[in-house]
Length: 69
Image 1 (cartoon, rainbow, N blue to C red):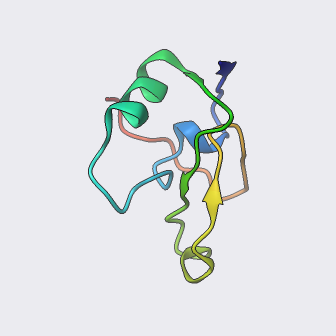
Image 2: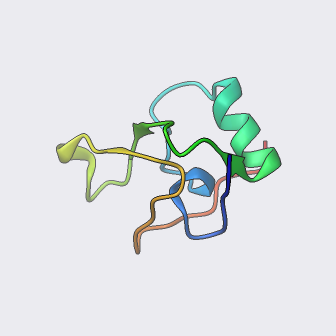
């Protein structure tokens, strides 16, 4: 498990936003730790057409803090 910080995908509103919050996503938000092997879709509008799969420790300039779990 790796620490996840503000600015990284695991704590971003766009990480997995196009499906119901799974227990994995809730765990990442509450513990601020994630397995780097976890992948989920990036729902950022600028990236949507690319169907990107990102890890929780990734990041970009489009970070938007996720609502608390």
